[in-house]
Image (tube, rainbow, N blue to C red; front, top):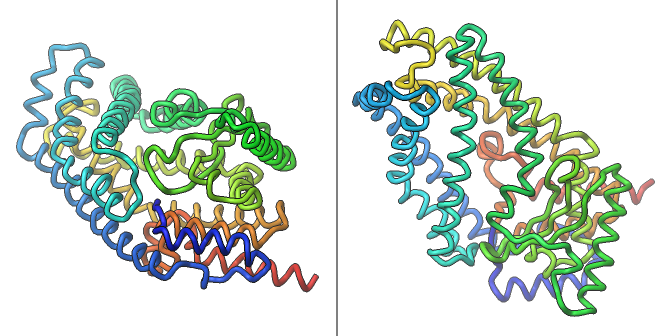
Length: 411
C-alpha cells in the first residue's frame, strides 16, 4: 500500500489519457517504484520472521518460567468463564506491550518511510487500540466456546469446536461491514460523498454501472459505498463486504479519485468473480476443514501434555501456551497450502473479470497502476510466492491478461 511520488503520478495520469489503446506491458510498471517495492517487501519479510521468533519465544517463556501455572492457580477460585478472561488479560497485555516496538516499526515507521501512510502517530495509536480491543473480544469469545467444550466434551471437543468455528466465521463475515469496519472507516453511499452536483452525477452513474455488473454476476448488493481510505493510507482498494443483507460494494476514495470508471469496473469485476465462483463460502469451508485437523492435533497434544507436562486436565488454563504453539505451528506448516488454493481462486477471478468486462486494457492498466501506487512487488522470488503470497504476482496477472487479449483477437 503506497503513494506514488509526484512524477510517477503524473506519468500515470498521462498514460491513462494518452495511450490506453497501446498494449499494457510490464514497461508501465514504474522502475523506481518497483525498486522501492522490492526493498519494502524484503523488510516486511524480515519483520515477519522476527515476529514469528518473538511469538515463539514469548509463549515458551510464559510457559517454561512457570508464569502460566502461577496465573492458573491465581484464578482457580473464580468461575471457569471468568477465570479464562482473568488469565488472558495479563497474557494478551504482556504480549501486546512487548511486541509494541515491532508493531510500531512495521505499522507506522516503515509505511511513512515509503510514503504509504497518511496517519499521525495519535491516529495510528487509536486504530491500534481499537484493533487490539476488537481482536481481543473476538479471541475471548472463541476461547470461551473452546474451553467450555473442553470441559463438557473432552473426547470430542475438537469436532464441536470446528463446527463452532464455522458458524463463528459466517457470523463474522456477515456482521463485519456493519459492526467492525465502521470503527475504522466512514462509509457513505457513493452518490453522497460529495456536495458537488456534477460529482454526484458521475458517482451516481458509476454506482449504477457497478450494480448492473453485480446483477450480471448474480450478486445482490445493498448498495455501493465509498470509504475514507485516504485517512490512513495512500494505497487504493475496493471489494465486496458482507453476506446476505449486509453484502455491499465498497470503494476507497483513493481509488475513486485516481482511476477511470473502466478501471474501477475491472477491479470490481475481479471481486465479483469470487462471488460467481462461490469463493467466500468455499474459503470458509476449506479453512474450517483445516481448523478441524488443527483442533484434532491440539487434542492429541493436550492428551500427551497431561502426562508429559503435568497439566491438570484437557481444560487446564496453564496449557494455553502449549495449545497456541500447536495451533500456530500447524497454521505455519499449512500456510503454503492455503496460499496455493487462494492463488488458484484469484486466477479464476481475474479471468472472470476479463470475460465479464471485455476490457483487458482497463484490467491490465489498473493492475499496473495499483502495483505502482500500492508499492507491490511485481516479480517476487518464487519461494516467496509459494510460501507467503495469497495472490499471483502482478507480473503474472499482467501477462495472463495480455495472453487473453491475444487469444480473443484471433477468435
